[in-house]
Image (cartoon, rainbow, N blue to C red):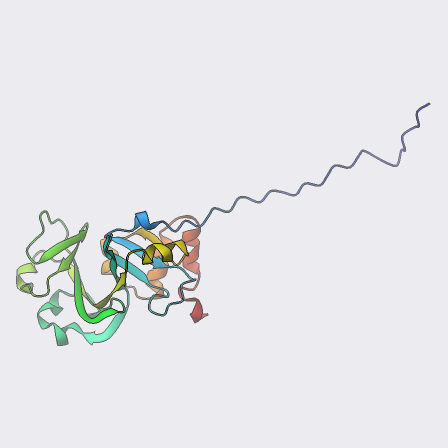
Length: 217
């Protein structure tokens, strides 16, 4: 006769299954294909270079020769009226030079927003949308009517061919769309960095709560 089942043995135990955790979406920081005039390069927390830690860079030009942009949100102590008095009345507050980057810091670059322009007005060259590069040798009075506001930068940020691609691949930068409002934003430093990331989606937006510059921890 077959042996009777042990009444204390109960039903065969099933292998325990833990609850599956929801998949964490990958951190999407964009690629080199997303870089172009008017886009933003946002420094990731791992980027420790003091020139760029916690920065947002507005891209002015990107081609086979390299990439050029200006760091946003880094006001200096140098008043525009002391160096370029003709342009100070068109500048948004604070009316100072902004530190555009470590390259050629004695060079001045000027960006202006000019809504509703069709063809490029004299003295202006379109970067993207309503953002234009301003010829500082032009007559500011001739541009007054079309310029909503401008900002002057001392120096710029530059990458040689292949350099930015390598930095993006290493996770140093996220590339996101920019707006005309970013160029003239009154936010500076970590505030601007967080504001730009906060309007993104997914894990990139979550980073807006992290320190812009890890060394500041």
